[in-house]
Length: 354
Ligand code: SF4
Ligand code: SF4
Ligand code: FES
Image (cartoon, rainbow, N blue to C red; front, side, top):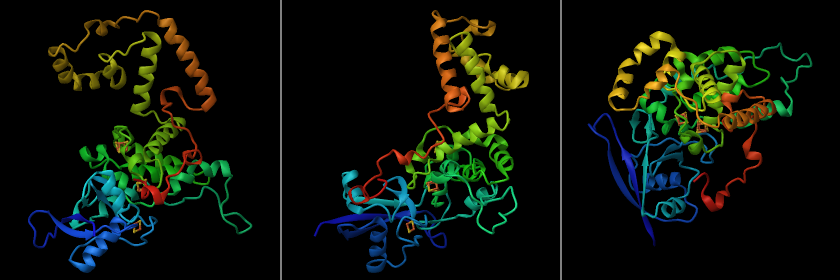
């Protein structure tokens, strides 16, 4: 019988000074998920392996882990698919990234819960309950704005591979931002500004480096990165003047007036004289590396054929009216459930989101 190696991250803080890997040889069985493989190893070879699970049906979010380096639900991906995908005979399982392992694949969830509390992930009605005693209602159009975000199962796969979280543990992260979006965009919710204030605190939304990794890893197509963009748009629509928006407006003015960005004057225009002083050491480094265009200090030059840029700009402005999103923020994101048009993966063929 064909076999494969299941290489499991092991760590027991009561006896191990360092984590290590332990490998189990298992038969390749048709339809076997990675979670089922972990069970087989635990039941037949080593009862001490620890991992979380509950539904075994990609619903509860408990079994998220890194499988060959990428976070996903162990109950959703099949062994055969992973072996084929990576052209290997070994499946390596680690806890999700950006977390503190507690024991083997089980990690400390407190930090996620603490982050989540900041955006109050529960419905705060803006009106008294309907007099007929029925539930708060909303139109299908309004519901479409939050339908996909409501599918989040809090598995934290998106948090695992978030590049912004790697460098800043105070970043709330895509799971939390998505949840904030789900409620802030709910037409029945009364705490929109409060939620926006929470995600804007300490420039939180700005920390996202737009790598799209979270959206790629999400097993439920919640679109966490896009929800961050939607929160930015919402904050601008609500009148919050965020650094991101100021930045984008300066870009817009530069492109319109010169066809080029003036990176030299940008910090001063964005953050005033104090910001420019703070960034002076960086500017001096750029000067010595020959990266500074001196003309930019005096406004810089304009590109030839600026009229053509203006024509493109006018066209984009027309688009702005059409999609009701301010021009600097158009990033290919619209208030729509993308899944309606996308062909969904065939679970049997692909083993889920892999
Ligand atoms: S797009 Fe932003 S939130 Fe998503 S993983 Fe990248 S840095 Fe994190
Ligand atoms: S957004 Fe997706 S990946 Fe992130 S916690 Fe929710 S379901 Fe999991
Ligand atoms: S066990 Fe529930 S999502 Fe995998």
